[in-house]
Image (cartoon, rainbow, N blue to C red):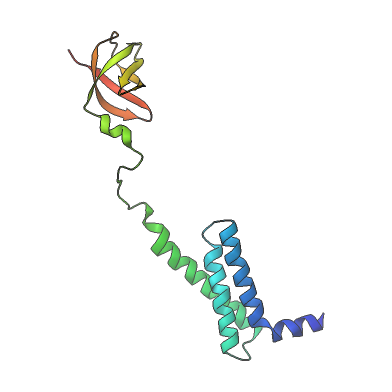
Length: 152
């Protein structure tokens, strides 16, 4: 056991670099967001151990932990925290283009539900009862359901 500890202390830089590379490979195989930053912290610790001879094991652990926490904090702050503040650019919201347009009822709207013809497809419509052939105007979209009002 003592030989292993002596060997690990003698090759600590290579161990930290190996762990860092393994974590980066793990990040590529199983995408997440934290293995990348912890892997980079391991690589930085390996570089510190290589540059500073006699860097004690306890200090290596403190350096690794400090660098990991710093990188995860900075990554979260600058890369991941701004998702809530991004404005809606309309991607994947094609249905919103139909608001305000007029369509024809193809299955009577009875008890608040029916179908309207939109281009070459049929959409579920909800609104006041309307017979087949009546014109309705879309006032809202909720999922794949168009909320309509009859046009007199």
